[in-house]
Image (tube, rainbow, N blue to C red; front, side, top):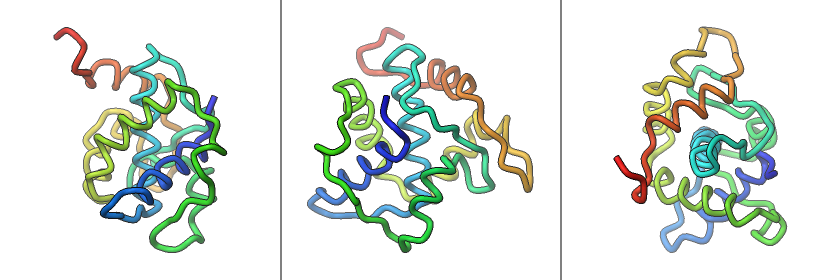
Length: 153
């Protein structure tokens, strides 16, 4: 099983290899981790990508461990590892590729807006608190709302 930090590093590595490099902020990184968890769950019929919890913070879903690891690294983050060091499975790579391709195009603030309109955050956010978003809420939401091209309607 990957860690949330592996997922974050993957996103940073992937962004750094783009021809038109678009640096990733901590806020955007948080949303990409959230979407990666949901996409992986959908691909694997309900399995977790990483064990760390996602919490409902004011600006959307956050993995506390990822936030703490990168909060002092500046406005735009750079990877500390390379792909080989992550040791991701084929299915993990597939989910992370799908997440990156579908969500990295959006700004941090657009991703924030998107997550604010989705049930996992909406149902668990409480002002001035950082409540855990139950994995089941994320799993169920992505199972119902996300459709892959090869799925029947």
